[in-house]
Length: 271
Image 1 (cartoon, rainbow, N blue to C red):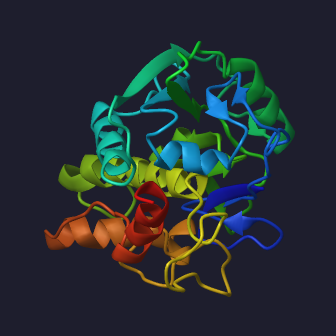
Image 2: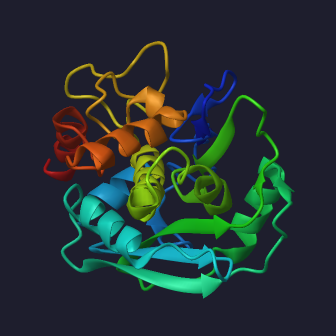
C-alpha cells in the first residue's frame, strides 16, 4: 500500500503520512524462501530484515536525488541516527547517493510514474550481507495535491520512499522569522523522511505487531500520541505548525519515535 504525508488535509482511500498518503503493498515474493536480488530475504516480511541483524547486518540507504534537491547532510545524519537507535545493524548503516534526472519543477508525479522511477533506479549492487532501503528526492510535486492539501512524502512496499522536497521548501518558511526558517525547513525535511521510514519498518500496526495498542483507529497506521513522529496529524500541515512552534519556543524541535513505537520494533529486533 502507499503511505504519504499531507499538508493540511487527511487522505481517505490512502492513509496519510507527514504530508501525503501511503498504502504498503505486500511483496510479491514474500514467503517463497531464499534471498531477493534487491538485498532482502523472501522467507519473512521485509521490515523484519530491516529491523533484525541476523541475516543482513548492514543497511544501505540508496538515495537518488535530483541535483539541487539532495537531502541536507544534517537530515541524512539525523535519519541514520534515528534508524540506528531502533534496529540492529551491527555492520552499520550507510548512505549511497546517485543523481536523478530532473522531471521539471512543474511536473505532477502520479504514483504509477513514481513506481516506474523507483523500479528503474533501485539498482545499487548489494553485498550478500546488506539490505537496501530506497530513498528518492524528486523535483515537481504529487499529482494528488489539492488546494486543501499537498503531499510531502510517500512510502510503499516496505522498500521505497519519496520526499517531495520542493513542496516542503515552498511551505516551511511561512510564518517563521527568517533567522529560524532554515531550522524549520531542515527539521521538516528530516521529520517527513523519518515518518516515511517508520511506515517502511511496519509502524504503526502496518505489518509490525504492536506490543500494546497505540494505533489510532480513525487514522490507520498512525500513532495516538502527538509526542510521536508517527502521530496522524503530522501527515497534515500540522507537522509544520508543530515544528514552527517548537523552534520559536526554543524547545527540542525534531520529531522522533515514542516509547510505544520503539517497543514494537524492539520486540522483533530482540527476539
